[in-house]
Amino acid sequence: MLASAGLLQTSLIWVAYAVAIALVLLVAIITTFTWQSPHERSITVSIVAIVSLTSLLATVFLLPVDIALVSSTASAHLGAKKDWATPERVDGILLTLKIVYYTLYSLDALLCLIVIPFAYFWYEEYDEVEEEEGTSGAGTRFWKAAKYTLGFVFLVLILFLVGFFVPAAGGGHGKHLDLDYFKRLLAANKGEKAMTFGVGLLITLGTFLYTLYTGAGLALLPVSLIKSAPSISAPQLSATTATDLEHNRELQRQIEMRNAGRPDGMSQKDRRELDALLREERTLVRRERLAAEARGDGRSSIFRAWTKIQAVFRPLKLLGGILLLLLAILVWTSMLITGIDKAANSICKEHCGYILGHINVFQPVNWILVQSAKAFPVDYILMALLVLFFFTSSITGIATIGIRFLWVRIFQIKKGRTTPQALLIATVMLALIILAINYAIAMIVAPQYAIYGTQTFCVNTPRHPGEQPDCREHRDMVRPCSEVFSEPAAKDVCTPTVMSTFLNRVTINWPVFGAVDFWAQFAFLGVFMVVFVTSLFRTPRLNLSELDEEAEVDEEEGLLASTGRRFGASWGDITGRTKNRGQERNGYGTAVGSGSDGRN
Image (cartoon, rainbow, N blue to C red; front, side):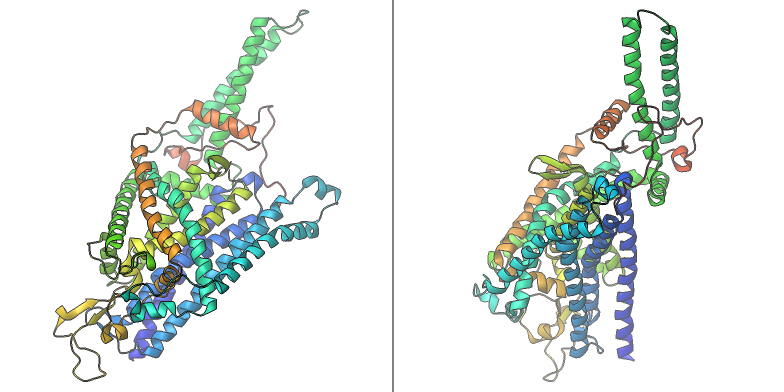
């Protein structure tokens, strides 16, 4: 009976994770189809991006499952293991978690270091002229892409060999390293040591991106919702532009008819007026494209559905922005408290990546998660929303800053205008950022909750040797689990999460990674504060001349124009209907087509 109860509880946790993965897949599909350009769409790139984002988010969403499973083995009120949680059952749970973790991390590495580069070069090797002439086929493209991808394969092998043969830098510093917890972290075989080196390096690389992009996005996301652009109805803009365009072309016809048959040609005055009308016509055509893209014309059904949903819920943006701003400030404050606490009270400082034995100052996010964990799955939902908030903030940061090398912008990331190359590079960046987010949430945002969850242990003396201590009559003798406790009861009851054990193994075996990742959190907090204060004093502007300039720049780059701004809610946006909508034409009066460029 007790074993069945434990099996039911763990099964429900895995079912909740499966539901979360289904939602993650939906988020990945919406993100990919919303941001990529419909005129340069590639089936291969779309599939790779969706699979990669799903795998990456599944990896980071495994942390709440990890916490819930280890917490389910112990009674938080009594400070003892549950009757069904025998050592064999606990070891089985941890083994399952390790298998899932290693599978997902291996898949992430395979996607980011081999599959995504291959898809990038596969797309780059497409040549429409050679395809039509038959001089280049799928086999040629495959071998060219594979040749370039081999460079990333050699990079992976080099990283693995370095981690396999180079001796770990941790160990032997400080009395706290004699504790059993730290002994287990140092007792890793060469294969685990090589993996910790590779993951530690990737986390550190991702931390630099996380500091810039996620730090900026965490401030910009709520502020952009609060300070929305002025309301402009896309159908109304289309109808007004169509009327102006018709009037413009009528004036052009009048000038041409007035000067028809003149032997000396058109007068200088009429020539200047006609040139001005032609320039205005090009501007109106571009403006008409802006309204068409705002309605989702020529886009996928997913994009159009997402546009309708945004239009329906747009009045709630202000309230949502305020709530997200409060959450961002709460997270920022919690991270600052943990950072200062670790810097001042870490049990081994830089020798182990600033591992904190126990929280010395009240930390609001950690407290909320620990308390909500008593009513599963509330804590899982809160943790999932927190992860999704960091992920969405990262996308916002990448979209705002763009893909850059130093100060030079290489690719621009915008809704409906992202090229396949930019989408793949952004996916790799998000992969590295998600690894850094995993570290930040587990080690900084909610350190105690991420390591032991709600587990506690009893410090009361057991009645008989070998028995568990009994705190049913002494609730004041129940203590939260911590890395620094060496009591036998703590060793028997407290089971650290697999993720926290792996991250602590990285920081204690390779202290340089732990030190860089830790101090980068203060840089993250600084970036957030600078961007947040700056955005508060910037007034959002949205006018037609600005939209026209943006569309003209895109046209010069060979892309169709895009809104690039938010259009306010109106019934026309929701229904998509308007009166006397003019035909969409390009600058020469021909119909504008849409679709893929033929690459797959």
